[in-house]
Image (cartoon, rainbow, N blue to C red; front, top):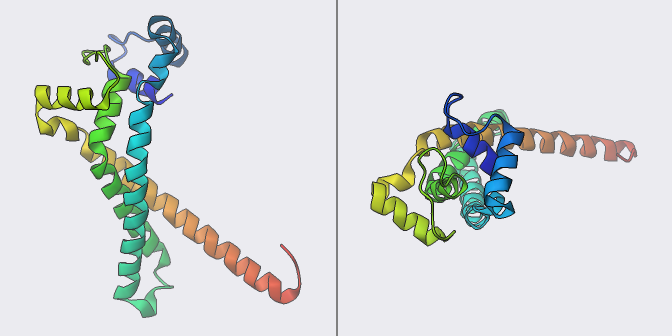
Length: 182
């Protein structure tokens, strides 16, 4: 579905080769077969590993750093700490992995709305084509909107996770004293 989303985002309503989601799915399947839906699978997997590593490492480091700034107020400022650490983690992870996201998008949209067609689905070939055509700056295209998407999303996610975790820990802590099992 990510490939379908990317293709639908490329064209405007007047020049898009697709009338909607299902039209896109049918046309892609008919023209390129099922392999088109997995054209960027390797790149996606390769991108998610470093994204997750940078994301978690950054979150923990920033959270620890912020808690050390004012340990006496750490409990009062939990939401701010988690949101800030989450935003930093999402933002940095997205920027670091933008080149792989550019490659993924190129593989998903090849041949549509002026995007290049690639002879192979090789990540290396796509990297080389982008650098040859647009220079190294072509590999970081879209980093700002990508960061502006991932930073608040991670801030919300981590804040929600940490608040839920605290809520359930407190609930379980208080219920264990009363002898009630939850």
